[in-house]
Length: 609
Image (spheres, rainbow, N blue to C red):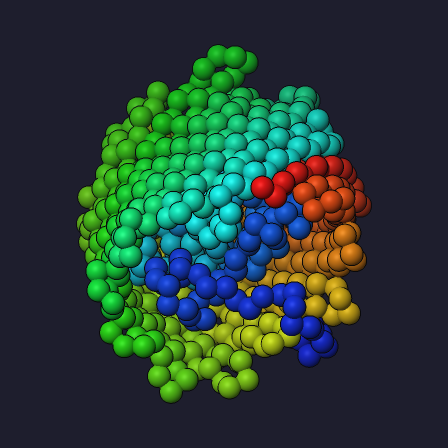
């Protein structure tokens, strides 16, 4: 833990040294995920990655979009399209609630989202909410919420906005994207399609005992084709309707398991109605489904089919009883079901929940209180709550403190996967504390927060029984610091994370939880000169362990990226990037390679009609 407090003054010392102008870095945007309302609040630790951020940094994967974001650790099993795990504030990869356009996504068998199959070309923005949100969303939100919004033209000002892009680069990687969007009268629409393919590289580093059970010295490719569609209509002054769909499918090749290829399908669809019942009463109704399907092969022979579906419905009432005072009352329903070539003892379960929330502001104090009661068909009733307080000074500085509880039911794989499930598992429960201070000023913004999370009955793989098992307890402490703005016409963003995620179980007492780097630092610098722009990113990730016994250490590493863009005409833009220019040979999961020097060129055409 000492490393956290040694390193944090370095970040703090950067804060007063930056003199920023007010025309580049926006203040914290309004986010609806943190409160499930449009009431602006700074009490939650949030980051928003916009479409502009994705295009400016020339991001081509979800991993690339989230790497370097405060509180996030990432592990990847060998390149684009390979298994990717996200750890938020040191919690498990299935402790993140993942929403896509408000619909619960992810696999009912693994409990985690297939990040590697979500195409960045279809994304409009990503909201990252750090800290427990079970009091609003129920299970899965121990570490936080990541909400992915697909492309949306509800704020468009023209009837037709076509876009087209094509790019290619190292490892036989290319992608093509085309779309059209616009607003016609009271209706808005968006249709986007993309295709991506890469020959990849050899995923397995050859150390069979370090994670790769099979090693084929070949290139492990990936193919993806995706479509997103959205249609909305403002029927009356008090009623709007919207429907949306995201489809992603293809195939991927990989090493390290008893299969070497998989065909996959991700399908998320849903609809919502927004009703302004009275001036002070707004109703949001939403329903949808998320399907995650994979078919695995070994040398062309089928080895397993996993088809999971999550069906959800939500009814939310927001009452603005007075200016800056909002009550929320809601109901959520979720049904998980699986079909598989393997035999599971149970194949479905549902969850009903009701919740209430109050948000208020008085005499520069901000308060948020929430309570939720979930009834899980298998594990019964669970209650969660949170309380947040902040005081806003007149100079834009906010000090805050919060407490929240969470819970997570074991997944179908953890309970029932043939030969590897443990039906004796019980739900995980958590308590989290956070204190923070942040500043939003005319010219720059910054934040510093510290947090402590205790998780009881945390589920992790136990090599002593070769099954998942409940640890008696895990404790996670961390610090996050960020500063952003503009100095001498350079856009600058710095993020620093220090993490101390420890098991408190007797068998692995004080061991570091697997695949969490304990030190993370990232700096992004960009500069626009006329029609050209240039940028660079430096990313440092400290040592991590690949197993709970801490016998397999994964070394720290540094990567350096460069990017450039030139706008030939108002409609045509050329982009180029060099990722990992130092050709760092690094791993984020023991035994799995990462890409070396990667060059990519992209052409964008967006005519003004």
